[in-house]
Image (cartoon, rainbow, N blue to C red; front, side):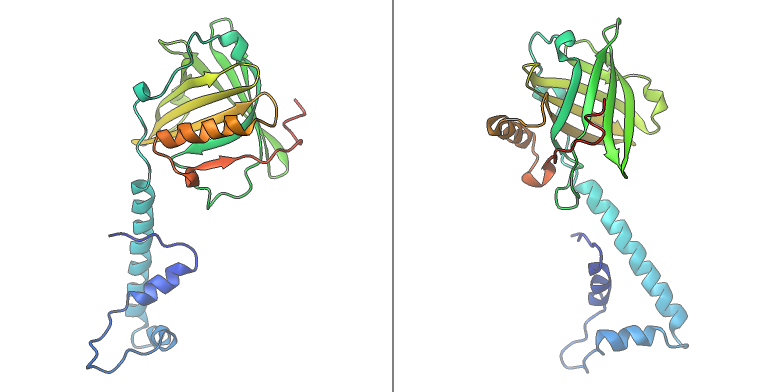
Length: 242
């Protein structure tokens, strides 16, 4: 059985790993005395070695927990596809209203600032895709290409060899009415791990509660929980300067 150890609890976890003596033996010294004893000249090297090994084990446990907690990505056949997808109507600027995924952790996320993603249709029916976000008080732009797949509304990441570790990247438009909202599914295989996310787009910064509820319901149908779902805080800087 593994345990997740975070922040200050790591030290407490290490202290609690000290073997407990049977009741009929003299009690162990307090944590403070035990810690000080590690620093005595006679046993400092052994104590530091033990502490280092314990820390290493704790970090390895954290890494294993992180991998084990990834909810498996659903097969694409389980993910709906917008019927009769119209690529020309889908292009343009979308505000990112909601985000859900197996690598999203609401408890660990800070304030999730709204950003935009703009789809520009090219002559070969691929999209130039530009995301604009506020980061460290400056505007950042992330540009990539989505190439049409064998089904309308499904795309692959273009020039994937430019992205180290990324083995595949699939984009699938789940549902959209083109002028109000869209739900888009992303699946990435990177370093032999499968990640997936669903983005709720809006043509404006606000969507109806019903659309948000539909988004939550759909993401949970893929195995995600409330802790995997976050909604953005509207901002003006950067995203309205385009």
